[in-house]
Image 1 (cartoon, rainbow, N blue to C red):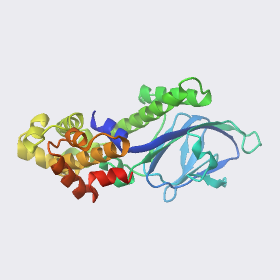
Image 2 (image 1 turned 30 degrees about the vertical axis):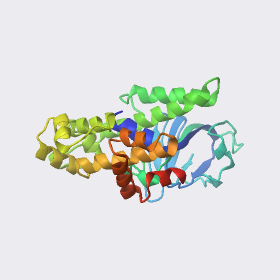
Image 3 (image 1 turned 30 degrees about the horizontal axis):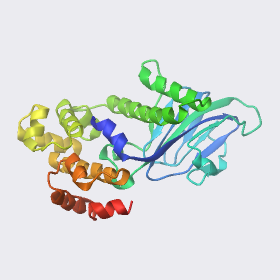
Image 4 (image 1 turned 180 degrees about the vertical axis):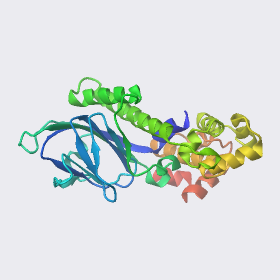
Length: 312
């Protein structure tokens, strides 16, 4: 796997949820703040306003995509002054048990201009959130325009069709399409970030830096390899010292510190989601000794791997 695919696969927990909803003006809906989650809103028809605390109102048009990577509370409404309905949509919503909902009810009954939204949410593991996700702003707005990636629009259309008219296989198609949509959103946002020379830092810069990206992809493709700084530098096509300095500046930690952190994050997921024997988990994340793996895991998570698994 490459780094972006791994981040989505490993840090997401539970089942993603999505809904296809139509409102008629006047309407307003508050979405609760849910730490440890990420969500998106796509305007399929019509327009609306995004209202978030501490930020100016943002007008959204047909085709606009909004991604909220930190579960920040917000309001969507036909006009900024329209009061949102209560209660807020959030974890206590009785519909939360319906993973994929399609709601075409005219909530206001006034028959005003319609807006159709495609909503989605993910639960993430807040204790092991990848720094790539932590580096994202509270709100990512991808406006619709003629030059936007066609694959994002295609994923939106496919997901909307599955939610609007569920059919055989929808339960399998929707999670895959949600993951695809999330990947496209992140890919486009990282690709569009302006870079300013050798002093730029952060994950946007790291993923646009060929040597560092080559090293990251190597780690994520083969986590079990006996990585050293010299081997990673060879993947990057640089000598050892310049590579280590460059990696630490862009990623925020030294190469082997990142390798160890990702190994422990991956091991935690394997322990939570499978009954793979500890020796096999250790081998999959690069440890030939089960004892060495257990020691490293306890240092990272504060508990031995066997105890971690039993506690769920």
